[in-house]
Structure formats: structure tokens, C-alpha cells
Image 1 (tube, rainbow, N blue to C red):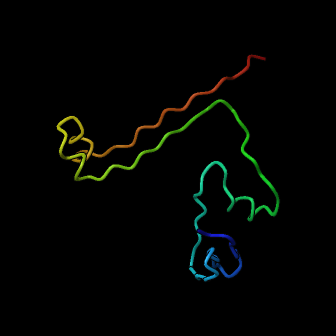
Image 2: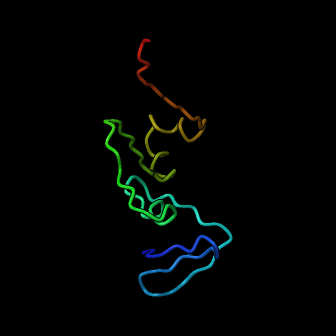
Length: 89
């Protein structure tokens, strides 16, 4: 587990005490991001908006076992749905 991020080096320190250098560090640790808090230098708890996003990872081999999912592998695509409320002035 990463316990510290040095954005200048760049490097990360693990809970074992080991430090690993890198060319690039990507902070993709989600809603309760400790990386974001370290970058900002302050606490940054999530703000509940009522919106949710879900993600799942499925091995391609597993998807190919199911006829209904096979097309997602053979013809990949990206679908995005966005919505919002725009108050009338």
C-alpha cells in the first residue's frame, strides 16, 4: 500500500518502507483519494452529490464465453451518458 507520494521526485513510499521511483505517478485511487489530499496538502473529503458511477473489470476470456457479451469484445465502443439540471433564469 502506498503511504506517501513525492510529487517532485516523483516516487511513492510503500507501507513496507520501500520507495519506488517513477517517470509518472497517476493518482487513480477513487472517491476517498489520499493521493488528491497529499497533492492538495489538506484534507479533501468527498462531497455527496447523489450521483453514482460504477465500474467493473471482466476478463476478455470470460466475456467470450457468453454469446450476449461477445459483441462487446469483437466491436468495442465507448458509451457515455451525462445529465444535469439547468435552472431557468
